Length: 127
Image 1: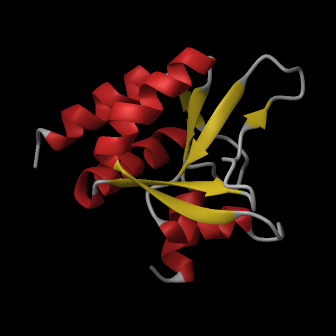
Image 2: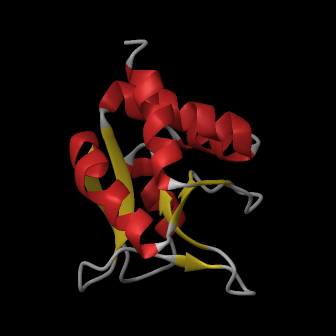
Image 3: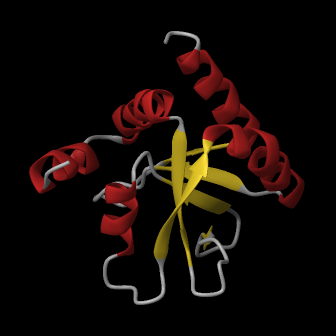
């Protein structure tokens, strides 16, 4: 994906990015996260501490773009079956939401792991 196409997606609103994420993940059957040197995933906590979420991306390019400027974050691929089987129950148990494809305007679609799983399964049924 070239930089202009990447920027175009990142400049769209949260709902458009969510739809883009669903279609791309449905096609590629993988989700991308960022991990640090200890292989711990990036978790974002809101300033007031009310919201904690795992940011996710539909491709390595988006994760790399988000991680620019941070020395110890690297993209990690999660196959969709692993995300459904391991990550969704784990995130739910830990009370973490999922932040889908953060944009340039710092907005994003935050959803519960089970809801994201349902939306992805709906998307997969159209393939």
